[in-house]
Image (cartoon, rainbow, N blue to C red):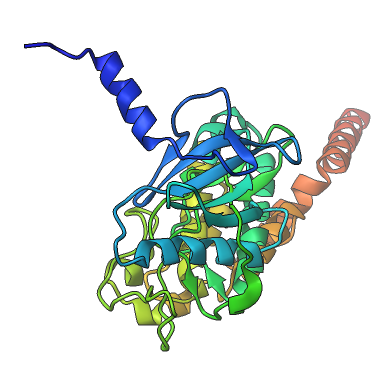
Length: 340
């Protein structure tokens, strides 16, 4: 019996996984093998030979005789194509490869995932500013009728110049379906290993792709998904479910720094309430409360009182207060000695 080495098996597997780019404008980069894997797709680093830039190619990698998965992958590309925002990775192209597999091409993002990058952040203010940029991208998606449904530190990338991008929209819920003609044939690329899971939809009217989410389907990541998502209540999931995920990301960021101040703990508690009606109504409202804290103002989640007002006054005018106390102490000492 002839034994095949593990290295040889790996080479065979990589050869089988690699997409056929022979008649496309793309070619695989020097790195062999996928840079990300998901439930229905692989992500490869490639070069766009026409424009001379690196891209990430997401390629369908599951049997799909009925064409449902291909339609879902293209739907995911169409969703991303509608979200033109600095905090969301852009899609460049989408189409079918010579080997028959559907793919899309997106911007290749270098950098670190937030769960790794957070270890480098010592300043609570820096952590909060990154969080605000995450909120901004999510709020933009909500304004376009798209819910993320899988917000977590692993799905946020921080680039080498501090850019913050929300990744992995593979299980997004479409509140408003983008126009059918918004997707042109070609390719899509995105570095984040875009979940590779079929995007899901809870629209009352089924899409042409047949990608509606059945009631009772649990979508999200344990520990970050909202209680209503964990119960499979897909019909009731709205932007407050993403607010819950944002609250858990904020908790993660604060847990990896110094002990959070009481106002920040209150913000986290409000964002992650079990009942959606008790959370912030939107990602924008959550961001506004964090901004108030950064500006030295009382967050709505942490009602003000006299003691807190006095504490903030002392914190803002610490030097003046110390000088006044020193002056009063010197005056008291002089008065005491003058009476002897």
